[in-house]
Structures are given as structure tokens and as C-alpha cells.
Amino acid sequence: MSSSSVPRPTSSLGAALTMPICGFLIAHFGWESAFYFTGIIGIMWSVAWFAVVYDSPAQHPRISDAERNHLMKALPQDSNKGHNPVPWRSLLTSAPVWAIVITHGASVFGYFTVVNQLPTYIESILNYSIKHNGLLSSLPYLGKYLCALASSVLADSLRRSGSLSTTTARKLFTALAVGLPGILMIAQAFFGHDRIWSIAIFTLALTINGAVTAGYLGNGLDIAPNFSGTIFGIANTLSSIGGWLSTFMVGELTKHENTYSQWQIVFFILSGTYIFGALVFTFLGSGELQPWNSPPSDNNKREEQPLNEQKA
Image 1 (spheres, rainbow, N blue to C red):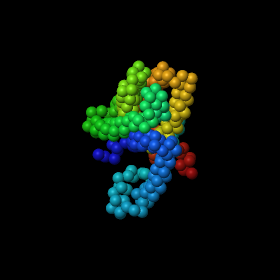
Image 2 (tube, rainbow, N blue to C red; image 1 turned 90 degrees about the vertical axis):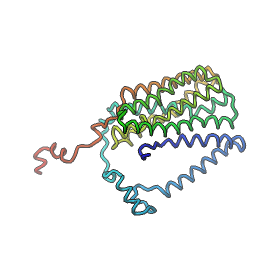
Image 3 (spheres, rainbow, N blue to C red; image 1 turned 135 degrees about the horizontal axis):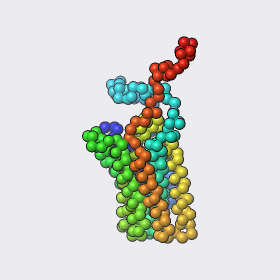
Image 4 (tube, helix red, strand yellow; image 1 turned 60 degrees about the horizontal axis):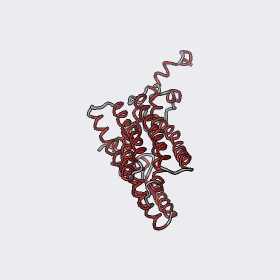
């Protein structure tokens, strides 16, 4: 498996592992223990990260010369060159860029709603204990992690074989990953009062959402690899509003009457948001390299200069 085919869905794996552990800790040692546990893990990880991670293989003190040379040859030749100025006007008026931003916002809004509110729903509506709550809440994240791995490998295989173009692959997997959860939220609105149906629908919806790694999530590298970080930074910044908005929405809808009928409204809003995001990317998304990704060459710049400036 090539490194390009391996996604980075480890946040979902982390949630799948942490939720049942924290459920057990809270049930036996109190809610404070969950924060101590995750805090210690975070500190240990940070220490390990700073100890082993460097900006480039050339700066790493603990790898062999043969390994360093192999890695340096595999890296892009221009990776150490100066950064190109961001073409803000072209970037901010690009339909494919806004397709990523809007779709990411819709997907993350749904994700945050499930992350923040699923334990509350399982406890207050489905009447599961905290210990069982943690285990059941972790199932969708384990499914999402596995789906992210499988869909990424499948998408790369289809692209390499020529069965799908990059644009078609990104749109297809985005439609599946964002559109199908929208449809499943409609099912949740009608069948979510049943324990088995509710857990099954939530698990399936978040599992399918893992396919975003083969869809829009890496699309910035397709359309503008030189500015993919900028694109995703914009998308992530704007989509983070969904974390606050989802909590506010559920709180307002359920603060007076925490009943299944109120949660049905939440599910219908989630459905509309997911489907809207999928449609936006279907119509505006692209897998083609954008012309503004590459700055004009020095030769072109010299040709565009007035003759009197060239003589000077």
C-alpha cells in the first residue's frame, strides 16, 4: 500500500478507543478520572511527538544516511524552496474551493452534533447507563475509521486503473460519505426511538461518513497542491463554527422538553445539512488542477515587464 493511499482518520480511532474506557472510568472512579486519563495520554503523546518529529529528514539526528537519502529523493524537489504568495483573489473566487469549504462545513456540523450529543441521546432517550453508553457511542467511530481506510484504498485503485477520473472519484465518494448520512438521519427521525434501530442507524451513518477521506477531504491536493494547506485552513476554521452551533441548536431545542419529538427536529436539520453539502460538491467540486496553483515563471514575468524596466 502506498503512503498516498493511507488516510489520517486516527481521530475516529481515538474516539472509538477512548469512549468505552472513559465510560468505564466514570462508572467506577467518577467523572474526574476521564479527564485525568485523557490529559496524561495527551502529555505523553506531546513529549513523544517533540522527541521524534523534525521538519525534514535532513534535520533528523537518529536515521541512517541510507534512509535519509532515500527519503530526500522521495520528497518533491522543490519542497525546500520559498513559499509562493497565496493568490487570494483566485482562491476565494474558485468554485471548487468553496465546494470543499461548504461540504466540509456540512459534514463537520453533522459530526460535531453526533460527537457532542450522541451520549446525551443514548442516556436520556434510549436510557442506557454510562458504562454501556461509552461502549455504544464508540461503535460509530470504529466503523468510521475502518471505512476511511477501505474507501481510500478503493478510490486510489479505481483512479490508477482508469475506471474513474479524479473528479468522478471525489464526487462519488463525497456523495456517499455526506449524502447517505443525510438520508439515514431521516430514518433516524422515524425509527430512532427504538434502541436497536437507533444504534444501528447512528453507527451506519458515521461509518459511511468515513469515506470523506476518499472524497473532498484530500481534494485540496488535487486542485491546488501548493495551497492545499490554506484551503483546508479556511475550511477548518469556518467549519469549527459548527461545533458551537450544533451544541446551541440541540440545547435550544431540548432545554424545555427533552423528548424524542424534539430530537426528531434535530435529525431533520442534520439530514438537510448533510444533503445540502453533498449536492454542493456534486455540482461545484472538481479534481482538476487549477491554473492559479502555479505562479508565473520568472521568464514569463520578465516577458511581461516593460522594455524600459528591462534595460534599466
